[in-house]
Image (cartoon, rainbow, N blue to C red; front, side):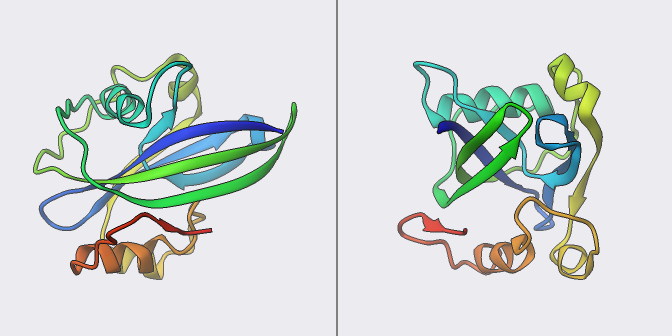
Length: 156
């Protein structure tokens, strides 16, 4: 089975809000989900390089360093071209800059983007929206209150 490696950011601002994008996923039967910034690791690349590239493309922000790897997630998808595994690493990144620009997004991302928002914990916990990580509110609450794992935890 094909494994798609992805690097994801828990991009947290000074108000402890997390940036999420709402994308339509045509390869997963047009599913619409709120997801963290990030994307695929290119052949020969690593997770940190991929995340820096994706953050620039999706937010316009440049990060010289990446925070700690805090979560891992593996999900099997039934895609239009067959089943695949999405192996994801989530990194904690704090930023005071909330001025997001989607100018550098790929054409595919622009076509499937349905919006973005800085979410508070309360909004996440009370929302009826669909998140790629359904328990993101509770997981993020742990991180924001200082419970950053010494080793990445599996959030499946």
